[in-house]
Image (cartoon, rainbow, N blue to C red; front, side, top):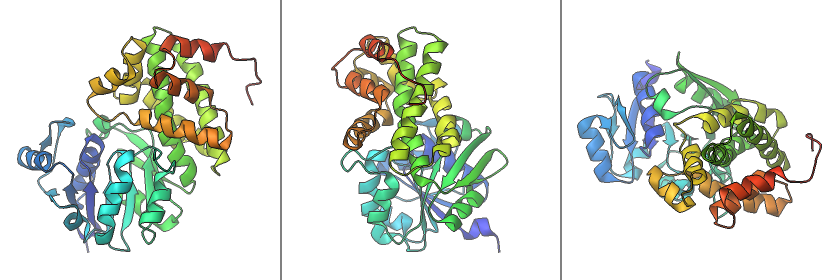
Length: 336
């Protein structure tokens, strides 16, 4: 029996990341079906065999099937890969859960914290689809590179070890290395919160500050990400791994990063709203910043960079003033 052909995978959401992973899985021989909210977009991709809106340089293999109806798409899946924006994950899963087989593994590649509930996406999945194992696939990886089969390394994190091992087996190839991890809290928070720091790194670049300023922001950024994470039960060492410092580095330094580009435009003088609109795609860090700010306040966790970026995004302070506030805080021991 050919395991690849026998395993049925449904990809929900067809932005750049959903496209890249669809191509990766189809090229490994898996039975891949795609569905998305925008029916016209799905029809266009099926006809052109290219996602010209999000990842035009990548061809969609002929083996990939397309389905307009969400519930029909997931009803016979062994793995359901959610590649929708973090703020849409809960509603999308609620619509699909009645048709997802109980033994199917839910995989999520969105990185964020739900703004309404302040919960991580795995927590929402446990509430909505409690019978399904959940795996977060996260790490320093850009769709633009993975879609072109460039090397990348990520982690498959889950409370269910067997589910993590299964996703490792399914997704890993000679250019996409997948490690397993049991710290779902740390992996999810590292992936979500680094988007806030990427906005900050972009602001620093937009203001014309140098590499030293960005390095300081990134390093202090991972410190406050870890502080919040550990207050919620994450392991400190997780933040030194691929889903922590690894994802932070790539998101804060790459031109592929929408969050960094958004910050760059803000630093150059655009309003946060104008910057987000000019990107043309969802900037996850803006909503995550709002959620993280509220979560940190509720837990009494000190997150000065997040606080200043939140103030900047809400028009309470301009970009230069935000940096000035951070640079003139009272002296501290680096380990505190």
